[in-house]
Image (tube, rainbow, N blue to C red; front, side, top):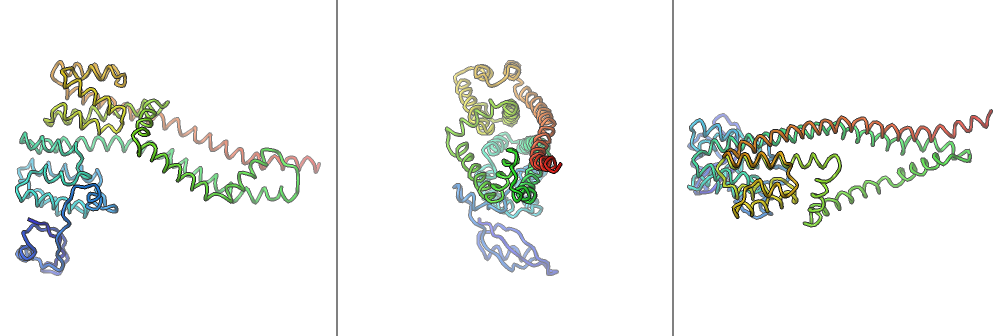
Amino acid sequence: MSVYEYVALDDRGRERKGFVDAPGLSVARQQLREEGVYPVEIHQARKKKTSALSGLLEVGLLQKVSAKEISIFTRQLSTLLGAGIPLVPSFNVLLTQTRNPSLQKILAQIRADLNEGKSLTAGMENFPRVFPPFYINMVKAGEASGAINLVLERLADFSESQQELMSKIRSALAYPLIMLLVGSLVIFLLMTFVVPKITGIFTDMKQTLPMITIILIAVSNFLKSFWWLIFLLIGAGVAAFKYLTAGTDTGRLFWDSFRLKAPVWGPVNLKIAIARFSRTLATLLQSGVPLLAAMEIVRNVVNNLVIGDTIARAAKDVEEGQSLAEPLASSGLFPPMVTEMIAVGEQSGSLEKMLNRIAVSYETEVQSDVMVMTSLLEPLMILAMGLMVGFIVISILLPLFEMNQLVR
């Protein structure tokens, strides 16, 4: 069974686009005619592949499938299955209302696999860039337990909670970042356009200038002549930083360690990682994923090599018969409150419930910490901009005062 992408006209001459599953091109055309549409253009959709390069080509660089779209798809599929609609008809409904062409092709390929008798997990595994291992393992557990709609509902809840947390963090940081960009632009325009015209008067008069004014003129001339070099250096610095912190294991380990130990922002990073660890592990365990398999998935979800290595060592200890709380406590990374709650959860048989409580607690703390940091950041940025503007104003006014004294 192949997937064909078509452009057709209905009885009223309106254009329709979509996908159809058929064993051959002629059969696909016949199916469309039976549905009352007349194909104008029809061709086989690109076949799915699993390599990294083909994954890039499959999803496309310009039409990516966002996490929000996957969350909406998951929620809608859960609702349809919960209403008693079979899997393939549910995908037919989702295909008609999906607007992203890349996601449409992916859903059409999965539907074709379902029509061939394959599992939903097998269809999703062909698109690792869209459905990560965390997602795949939960779907696999849902299919094995026969509660796929409940697992998909948990997946949607998890995705929405993570997006909400990150959205609040971004919203809190948006205003300070905008202030920084606008302030930097204003200072740059002052130094490259306004200051040269004013300081040009001092240069023409060949008067001995104060040191602060000489520094201002030198900086202004440099910015006016070599502004492109500054942007080039910034771009090169960003590229080098990304390579050193993400392109090598040593660099990434150093950067992840620094992120946890950095003043002010380090504790917030640790809380974000603990909240993600707790929420993800709880969701996986509630969906029937075994603890060791869940910990292997969580290791990659926390997005920090230091914490990931700690989780990997804890998984080995659990495999050898220890409790989960003991190795996490001995690592020194997880606070006592977290390890104590995990220990209580293991003893009482309510580990998932305790992990969810930890996640809620730390997500609330993260939001509170970020709000406090941004409230302190705003006056600091205003003060920094004020000092820079004050430096420019004093550098210009000081020679004027001296000239006024000479005139008197």
